[in-house]
Amino acid sequence: MTKPEADYDYQRYKKLLAEAVDDAKRLELIDLMIRERARDRLEAQRTSDRVAMTARTVAKILGPGGRRENSSSD
Image (cartoon, one colour):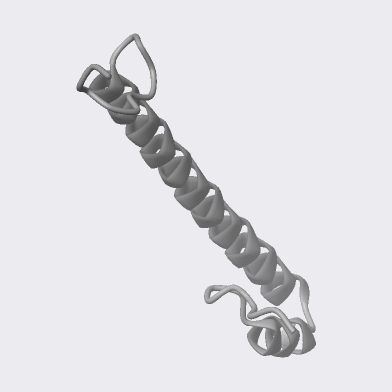
């Protein structure tokens, strides 16, 4: 069984949905879910940026020749 995401709380959303008995509460729930999804997207973008930065750094260190097996001549 996989571990659920730390920020996704199924029970919390289920409770909020049960409490959303009028339009105001339903709109609050929708707004909350939209805001939390935006946070997930921001974190995904940050992760993507870190991966790209790491790839650029590795490419810069390795240089145009790519991977270096051994710096000494045989």
